[in-house]
Image 1 (cartoon, one colour):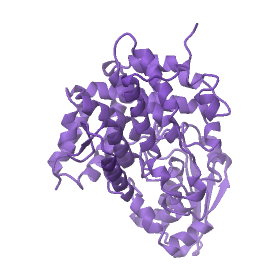
Image 2 (cartoon, rainbow, N blue to C red):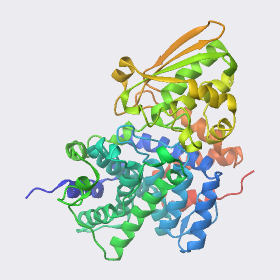
Image 3 (cartoon, rainbow, N blue to C red):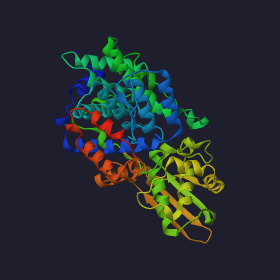
Length: 466
């Protein structure tokens, strides 16, 4: 009898070896690692990251997994939760548009926590990370878009599979490795959760969606190591994950080209801390704002051409809180114009900018007036890797212009260069470390596959800053 999708996925996870990964995949892991740490450094400063850290301390749990940028160590589950909160809570982390999820904040946090606790080599971590990316992206692709339409956020649901795959890859060996990985996936499925009501009602729950999923996936692997097991047909079973969480499933998207086509190569890296499907609208608006030296009081009208996939949840004109503002095309467009000529290529809107914008009556006023309309050209260029936008700006002076961004900067088809990633990493980490330390960190990550013990990186990140 042929193996089902769960066991096929487990066999793939079991077989991933860093040295056998294609060179483009290994190169991609390097820049995604830089971006993970860059975003985590920003996120660590957020108030909710302090909440997560304090909660982890209160819950206890001793172990050798390090909290990023700190001497503090916790058990792998709680360290994963804290670090995933840092990296996955500000909507600036990497994203697979078609799968509708953020993999890096989850799989890097999970793999590092297990590897630090067990003093494992860097090559094992990178192999586990590659396995984790593929697991959560492919499972999500198989059940989208009905999974999202039913009200689930796939970072929070499928993220548990990414963490479980990464952790299980590191924990298990021997002749029963595939079965034990599959049993870990089976356990993780029972802990999946994450609803999208926050789009409508606000709240801070999305700030920890990735963190909860990552912690549950690591917990599932440790439970399997302790002796527990989950169904090895959990994805495809009669009462399994796909049936419970989606109205339609295409398992070819899970198992097709598994091991030869790496979906992590489709992952986008964001310029701005907001929805991936809004990046093109910001880029187009920024270009117009620079060209016309536009200021908020001078704006007569703004129209944004969008694809149908973002109509509704991402086109709210009056967001209820900062999280909602980060998910609002009208607000992002207004905020971009508010920054005017200060928006240069490579500029990044951060959470702090959204927080300030929510207090700016001029930004809020323009956001109410931005019109989003379905556009056939934008529909044509939007797909599973990126979403385009066409922005038209009319000023009271009579000046007008329109910019169509088919693929936003950072998407797989228009990626940041390696040098861009290093510059963005250094720009953020320079807030913490001297230049020499930043240089050393880049080199450690560049050569991570050769580290005998990943705790080398943890000690560097814990080094005293400026």
